[in-house]
Length: 554
Image (cartoon, rainbow, N blue to C red; front, side, top):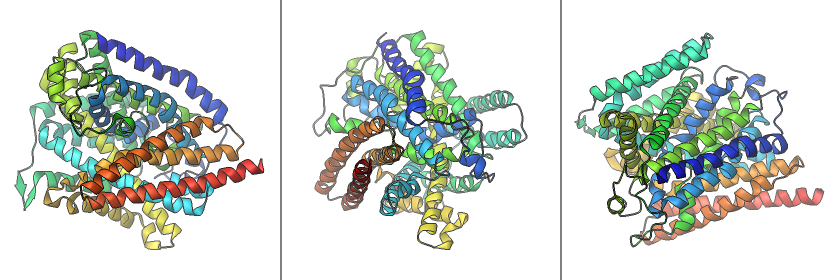
């Protein structure tokens, strides 16, 4: 029964955010204008700049930013207790994530679809752009390399998810062609969802697996190579051909998945096994403050969202008021996923008793996507009577498809950055889309294989830094938006206050990790951590000098 109270509390807050707070931000602060000619129309090229129905664009934006992160982060952070996790997800969605995502999209939309890195030069200065883009590239490198490893592991541990995951690509390609020919969107939506769930049913009965070893490489390594080969091809296709329809279908899948999970809560009414505040903390566990705020990034606020919002989503906005629907409501969708993840890994569906929960969460870092799949599958089984095996396959596919669509967008965004570098530093070769994509994929594979050997597990070596780096990027994005608002003579406190909070917590977390890596003699992570921290300080100083000049001018 406790789970219902958590759900009602969290969803009520998010509904307030959507109906009240986001309307205020859209109308009074960003002043979204239906008559503004968006870059999708002004620069339409049929590849990246494409005016898109706001429902389709919402699906692209949400599934691109969601990935597995709003599942993994909350499932780990529950270790400190479900109350801190629920509070940060709810408040973060309302006052941080929605404003950040919509703000990044609005700022890019007002500057011909520029990425946040390029936009920082226009708003703040040329030095800021170079610094900003270093952090952006590092975040994308982490996301792509790690998600490739995560999906490969999911295929090995859940072979029933292989067939539906690849079938979803075929379905998306067909829908992309049909939607281009103006087929009815509702009919395409129904057909796409039916085809996806039929493939899940088939996949549960037809598990597929690669040989344990082939040509000297493990199955895990082969999956990583295949995934990046696919991501390279997908990133070069026009957005309407695969990216948009795949993300749209996955967005609809989210609705079905959330309906099953939230419906199961009300039908099953499970109690919570996890403590409200965990007092049985293992020795060596990091402090909840500030680590909670970087462990739960996606689902509360995430710098990666700003990359997507300004990198692909802003180039597809049909009418400027759509930004509220796509950006803010996209953040609400991710918050809802994070909230139900907390319920799934905290309730009796995952651990029948508090004692069993403490056994499963004996150390910080336990849980993750596996806990969500197991707890969520049991929850759906108890609430709806769906066979546990089929429910497990369904949720495993959900995780894989979200991570896969993030890889699709992530590699495309890496290509954009490399091409921007080609323009900035006058290297024509880097402006070539194929070469830029090859360099992006090569960088990810070097991280995955170079750091971890033939298994490809090296993608995980940089992951501990993702939390603090990602949140520092969110603070930098909010800072650029704030400077832009100040230039326009509009109130900036609605972005500056979240920026200061995120910056302080994430910078503190980065320093804690720096000390930890130094003590472990892990000089690779020490070096990367120092680069991120120093870069963020320089961006903040540059921005403050601009803000001071603007204040004096006024």
